[in-house]
Image (cartoon, rainbow, N blue to C red; front, side, top):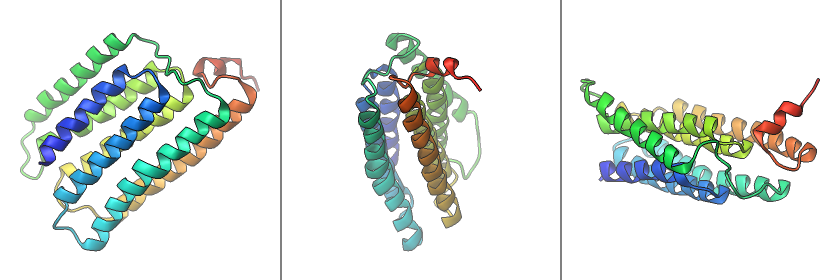
Length: 209
C-alpha cells in the first residue's frame, strides 16, 4: 500500500511541472502532505505511539494546513499574480521531471542495501531533484518557497527509506527547519512586496546597497 501511495506522490511531481497557477502548487503541497501522512502511518506502525503521533501531527497540521494557509496569505497580501511564470515551457518541464523520476528509479535499483527500501529512496531523490528544478526554472520567489517545501518532503521520505525507526530528534529538526524557513522567507517575500509590485526574482537585479 505504501508503494501505491508513493507512486501517487510521484504523479504529483509530474503535475507540479505543468501547473501554471500558484494556488495549484499549494494544493499539490496539501495533497503531498496527505499522502505522506498515510505513508508514515502505515510504514511506522511499530513505532512508539508518542513519536508516531508527532510525525502525523507534523504532516497533517503543518504540511496540509498551516503552511499552505500561510503561503496563500502571502500571495493575497502582496497581490502576487496567480501565474507561476516558468522560464521553460511546461512540456519541456514535464519531460525533464519524467527523466529525473525514471533516472532516480534506475539508479536506486542498482543499490543493494538490506535496510534500504529502493522505492522510498528513488521517490525521495526524485523529489529533491524536482524541487531544485522548480527553483531554477520558475520566476516567482514564492514558487521557490514552495519548491523548498517539496525538497523537504523528499528529505522526509528519505528518512522513511532507511527503516521503521525515526527518532524524535530527527522530526524535531525537520519541524524546526520548516518553521524557520517559512518565517524567514515569508518576511522576505513581504518586504519584497513592499518594494516591488511583482515578486519576481528578476526584479532582484534592481536592488542596490
